[in-house]
Length: 148
Image 1 (spheres, rainbow, N blue to C red):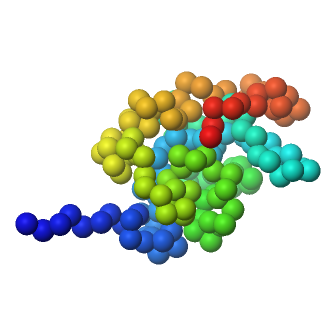
Image 2 (cartoon, rainbow, N blue to C red):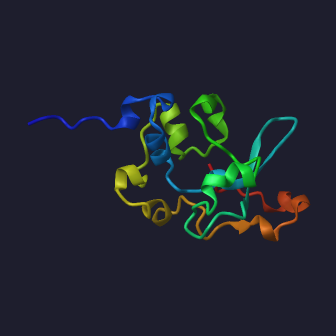
Image 3 (cartoon, rainbow, N blue to C red):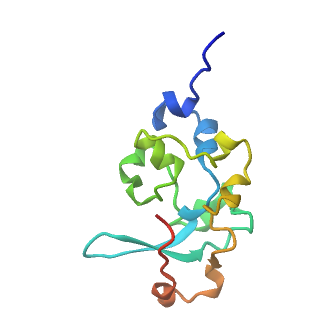
């Protein structure tokens, strides 16, 4: 009987992954698409419940291929930026792999389903408000504490 082979995220660093492997690490929680505020003095990052206008009800970007053109400050996670992943939620697969930690049981690569991230309550599904309905000066009113 042969031992099961380790999965790519267990054997490769983020910068060794193919683009397909990299993309598959995204669990679909959409927390990185929430608007964030940074305290200029402390550098602390605060998440808001305000999400990009291109986010759909299934936590998917409707303009994924054009996101950086349509939204120039859109977060673009890249292997070369691993050192800056500290602001990502503690459940984010990119951060977990960068820190040498295992993926969560609800992650689609573990569960085999894209729905488990929503069923587990980890995603922003049903908890976010489109930026179309929030004045930029009112972002502080929407700071949340449920993103770890």
